[in-house]
Length: 209
Image (cartoon, rainbow, N blue to C red):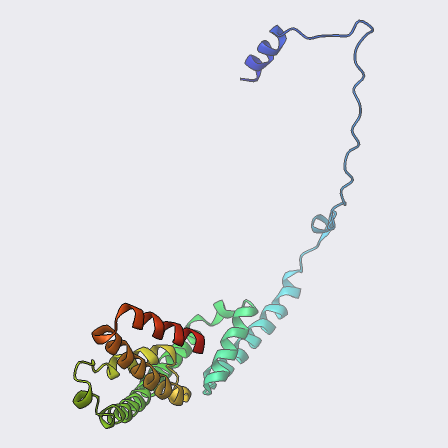
């Protein structure tokens, strides 16, 4: 391929000035920083067997000390800190079995804790829904406005999606009640209001908000 390109270029006419060849301008080359290492690794001398033996022995002793620390760690936060530290130091491959056992303990502990937490949260949801249902019954919506839909459970479920944490119990209750009153107004408009009346109430709500 290079020969073919050379032949094609040789056949193309080239314009040469009458006063001789054109002088090629020299482009200054970039100045790169020299290597930082030089011939360090060529001249580096590996430790002898006699020097390497105590190093390996010391490393083995330290590994066993860390392994003992892993085995006697019972506190969950300490377990996670220890695993993360070993991973950051690049030493976790020496303790794969021990780390897997620790993680199994963490997973099982978290599973039981998550299950218990969910059950407690579910009880709180049921208590709140019981309070909201009594509040809805006290309004006597069914007897006064029979066409209005009973959507208190659906609305509460919606608010649980917005504020699921247990500390937001008051927010869920207030938001559910306000939305339930809005649903009453919506059903009244759908059933009896004209288009003009609907637009008037929409404008009033927009000005209020």
